[in-house]
Length: 80
Image (cartoon, rainbow, N blue to C red; front, side):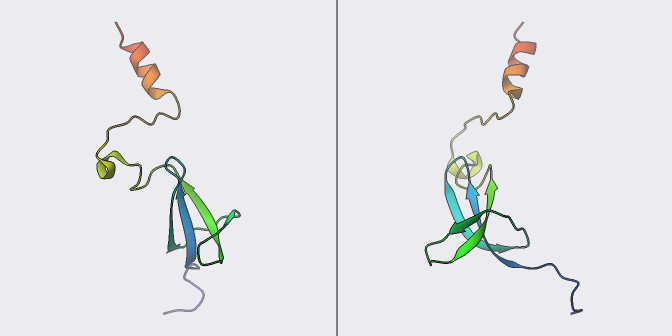
């Protein structure tokens, strides 16, 4: 492999903000926020809106997560 052409690949924590599910994995993403993990080390924290803990396909529950009011706009427009 060529030197200095690959992105930095390091440990990060992904947190699902809707279900408070966290997972430690490796990624090229980084963040200024840090979180202390169970092993006592601090890792960059990446917040995501959907993960396997909150996605209806994985949970088997159908729930609407509307963060910008799109569902209400649709219902108003086609309520006639």
